[in-house]
Image 1 (spheres, rainbow, N blue to C red):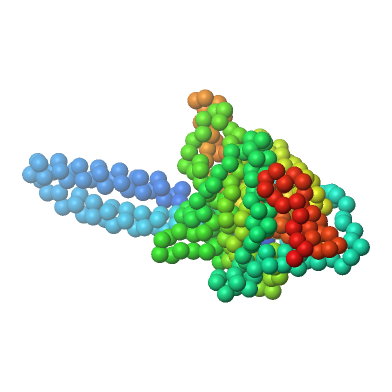
Image 2: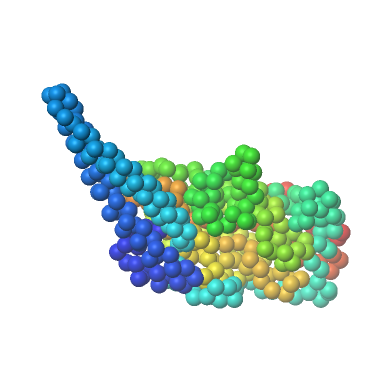
Length: 421
């Protein structure tokens, strides 16, 4: 949620910033509704005071045995007028909230212009691309029966998969290794609920705009979370954190669910784009002055993980028009996928400034006794398990079709070698 005071005081700046995201046309409408609301509030209070005053006159006149018909008519007219204004106020506030909820966050000035992934700014490329003296196999070929798409299609439909055998051990080694790495960096491990209420998705900015991507359980009025960012943010919804509590950092592990509506024909081979996947997610609550540094810190952790896994990658600064609704700035880490001969997004991290905190009602006191202010929130993927497995299989494949698994994962139960299938 954007700061309404900022919109009132600097409407042209806000409109110019939102125009970089292809938004902002609603600002004039929002300001009209806000102005009408501010006109109605004192009028309603005045009408209520007048009605109370006239009602008191009626009582006094009746007690004195005098005619109170004129005052009774005045009260009747005031009541009708008050009901009319209250009805208008309710409609104005509903429309105002709807428009305000539809606005995305203001993009950071350092986010490049543009609306597609091709407009992203390349920050750096890290690691040497693997050179193979044999025909490169993709992750499905390398995994063999350890990725069972056919059975999953019978049981659940397209874009689901069974992982079996060594890939299961690799997944949980990745998860345990990542959680311990994050805990060393001050993130408290959390296994959050994956079913959430509508207000949790609204609070993180996934509603109202992304409803077609979310699995909904209408009977229970619950939704399957597409990322543990949603329940992690809810840990401090409608709270005032005391001075000195920030930063608060979490590392959430959960299964995630996305409908991938509109993505037919894109990345349908294997497990790159599926409806259900597991992920380790970082989430931070910080003071506004620390948000930019925290963003860089989360990115550094993501890069350390990719480096230790021996994966070539690049970092890009996502274009303003390609940002998620709540993000002011976002970095993607794209790993090299040999079978596709290109980099693909593996992890990302976003600075959402105070946008989510306003929606969930998370505030903090800068110092004891001070008035509360809105915190800033950030999120970043440590390990997207499915895509990380793809990158590991393909970058570390051997001539005989086997895969050498990085040594950092061996103490956590990963096999030293997978395959050949």
